[in-house]
Amino acid sequence: MALSGLDIYKLLPKTNCRQCGLATCLAFAMQLAKKALPIEKCPFVSAEAKDILEAQALPPIKPVILGTNEFRFELGNETVMFRHEEKFRNPTGVGFIIDDSLTDDEIILRLEKINQLKFERVGQLLAVNLVALKQNADGARFLQAAAILLKHTALPLMLISNDPAVLKQAAYLLKDRKPLLYSANRQNLKSLGELAKELDLPLVVSGQNIDQVSQLTQELNACGVKDLILDTGIKPLADKIWDLTQIRRQALKKLNRSLGYPVLAIVDQADPYQEAMEAAAYISKYAGIVLIKGLEAWEALSILTLRQNIYTDPQKPLQIDPKLYAIGTVNPSSPVLVTTNFSLSYYTVLGEVESSKVPAYILSVDTQGMSVLTAWAAEKFNAEAITKALTVSGVKETVGHKNLVIPGYVAMISGDLEDQSGFKIVVGPKEAAGLPAFLKNLH
Ligand code: SF4
Image: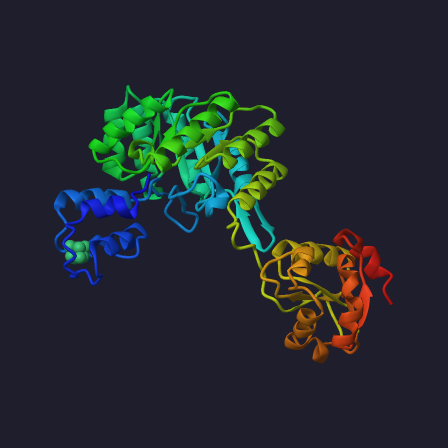
């Protein structure tokens, strides 16, 4: 657990000499606890106390970066057990296992599919993160397959092999892409630790349980290998969730440095629905990387959508710029629809307007990212706010009519809005799904 201000105070000289710029050592301790000042501001702190304070200032879950190019991504650096306490920081990396026993053409086809797994949702790009090559054939084939990966995908790479010699050759082949090596265990700890250190590569540490993994990370740390990913193997879902939760708890609540790393979860399900559900469970419960095999777009989109929702800052709803948006080939007669600047509200309306094929304007009102009914209840989507948005966005100068379509859920503001804005208010459907039919019949 992080040290409190009082814990830190006990480590300070307690002379209240003021050289740190604060009146007392206690005041300085409180600032240190908030990470508002560096320990160096006190010239009299002992070396021992400094070590303790510096160690506690490190992130409880070490950040680890995978990949080298524009697709590189960071794992770890999480600070809370529950999203509502603050937020989850680095989204789970979603990767795909490719078997080296496939033919060259099959591997290339899979890589092409993986490279295309990109989606836009509520204004954000959702993309997968990693390709893992698994050795099932001989060493020569693994190296051939690794060369195919090198050529056909720019995503970060992972090498999975039980043969340290083969893993070493493949690691040298891909070293400029900084592949993640899988995995160090009790038998190969020394050789893989040396390889990871030599090429400065991240390394997965595998044990059958948390204690074994903890022991191995301590030994690797002692050898100077720092960028680690933890793995307790493929297990039944409940057991794996238990491991993931206990590792997170040990890292955050007990400041157990030997478990303060991102955790890998490999899903081993033949049924794609089961695979998607298991991946979702691991993303929800602390996995740093989830590896699957299924390449279907529906499965990837489901998993990435869940990840997006979990890793959105709960204090800051996804928002778009509050302004007037022209959808399609609009003209001064095109209808104007009003909604909030909550991304999900806007993009839902946008999707329905686009599918209606009726060119229209969408006026997004600044509700600080609240949805329609929430914003109405908070008095941020009322007659005053919408009237102001009509003026600021230039609607009056852009269109040649004075009609405004409002969401059906806020029909009760029609009278006030008509009085204040001077626009004729048309009450639209309650649900955006009703917009295509509504727009086609609007005169
Ligand atoms: S400089 Fe150090 S000893 Fe002096 S008041 Fe600040 S914390 Fe206390």
